[in-house]
Length: 482
Ligand code: NAD
Image (cartoon, rainbow, N blue to C red):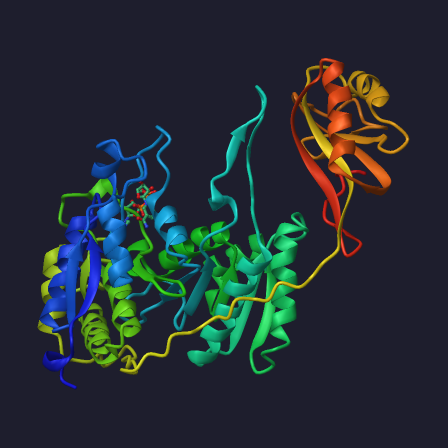
């Protein structure tokens, strides 16, 4: 079917904030010149909507458009600092169930000399969980906390996606990165599921890195990697590092994939420092749009644009972020760069490897993981107490609150055991975790009775966490030094 006779796919677009309008205009001019069969529906989101009093940054009408088209091309937006504004990016990703964030980062030797030749890494970032749940509390004068949520179904979904993505795209290796030497339950769950699932894909090589050395290797030896699957925060940081290694954060696009909807964007933010100057690199959003065309089954147009873009880069026509004196040929602004790409539509690169996409895109479908029956027993409780004083003084007040069923076992401060047998050098805050454990299964009434006794002493308890076993395996970490 020719581009002109392809039925137009409705897509929702948002021009965003900062450099957003400039790079969106440049991207759309290329899409239209390439005769992409799309019909755009614009929604307003971001800073202006936040500041008009809508703290979510998005209107009901905008949601209706997104639900109708199910495809969103979004320029970056600014999240106003402070004032309780939640990140709209996170809200859209979570509301539409966009669980997989796919971020290819590639080097372009000899056209661009940054990074090692042959780097071609795809970062598959979990998109809905981890510290991005944004559940934060100030609990005492000294202490604020942010909950890190890693779920079994969420981890299974993203890890399955990474393996299926590797299979569908002829990739050879999937690497997982976590910090499970420290976070044994949260990152440990992610790593364990990765190891389990790897056995289902014997044709794919797998490995695991602790995230700190993994990030260092991304910066220095990215050719070690092919597909990388990571929890949310690590993926966010890693994709900026990987994109910078290739030459600029402005070079990388990203696809946010869900079961029914998808969103395409640049990996970078709204770059307020260069907004309005007409110098931003539109490549990240353009390559996001290329991923979008592949997603909606317009692979031929996607390839035409991608190859024209590669030819432009190869011809040395570069925006300021990737321009190198003595190497690049012409320094251009945002729109000039777009015009150079348009002028090359139909051409293919000769030094860089051209790209061809299939016109029929098969979406990777991830079945919902089954929920297995499990036996859960409550065997104790951590009571968090706001208290100024010594561990021994706190223990002296708390010990009488325990009983034979639920005695005080341990007190920790910032995770380190400080009672019994603490060390006088340890710095303590006003936030104490006091662990009461039982040899047998207990119930809510036992915990409420304990809290009543603690309350009667006048101690200020601020929260509790139940200590449970799942099929006999403890679902809680020990105190450091316990
Ligand atoms: P940023 O990515 O906007 O900018 C970081 C640096 O990279 C800046 O020096 C900027 O000039 C440069 N840069 C970014 N994109 C570029 C491009 N296309 N061409 C040339 N140079 C480019 O990160 P930031 O400054 O930390 O964040 C600014 C705002 O963007 C914040 O409000 C943040 O919340 C938001 N943000 C939005 C998204 C998104 O919408 N997906 C993602 C990240 C940050």
